[in-house]
Image (cartoon, rainbow, N blue to C red; front, side):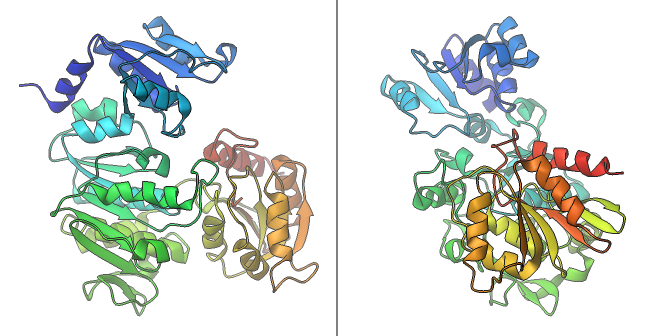
Length: 455
């Protein structure tokens, strides 16, 4: 008897398949489609001379490549796999749909064919840590866990290895969710704030995309929501809905006298949480809600005492000459940087600025005044962050001191030069990395390399 995976790919045999975008997640997809006898066209804006060896190997395996600025011109397809970064209303995609092509994605198909239970997490901030915590808790309980989506490796090629007793724990971005028609059995929305408005037409579209994580749930499914966030507090699911609150609201999962409680019963003392920051208390609350009935409280406590956090998320890089250097490159929005700043009791030296996603920075100004002694700025958003600080009611000239830099490298060394023994240097840009780096991970690794090279 064929599995759902085998049935799905059997329906694609001999069809024309267009894969839009040949990034990390879509390359295994191309190989899978070729394996099942599909006629695959791989489309990517990158000029052919700049393609890496792995993409050229796909061509050798039978994939027709269309590259460069005209990569979407004249594409013919029965099925189109959209890369997450491409808006579903892209004119080329709409034209293909009008000609009868089915528009889908690697993640959409994964949800269709996955044989095991799926737990999925989305939000503006905290989703990677929350996703990882859920995975760690389930693994510690003894389950086989497949971690992926917007984090880790692509999951669709792994489906043949999955068993019905396993769990897939998936982080989902708004880009992945925009046209999703499936929801997981357990869904978490950590919080929502303005983000990615350079891609979404407005905040309403961004929020609506996030709702797809629970829009197609059934009556027996579970939704975990942040009661302290004005947007997520208003959401309502189709099945069971449990809310969490760090601010004392009378909801299912709440903080009582420095103890995370579930339905009034103590689960985890916040003093047992190894990773710093009040936002991580919320991440634990969300994870505790997601694993209810699956993971014992003793296992949750064991994970909390040993889990050291995820790379690029307030990651301690080095202590050099009495100065602590932290990498928070994941902070690509003001709300994320605010959470990072609030993790420290002392004022920090902050490195900020980067690619402009067309989101407001007003809320960041007062927080920088309250938590930063020296502000090192660069990138396209540097002037916007400076303006937000100087417009803040708490701002006084020189408090914080503001240093403008030509690029990220100069900003890193300016922060190092300003630091004295006892200081904390925090690289938390409140901006995306795309102005100078491929992504936040490359930016974070570059920062760590520069810091480790300090003499």
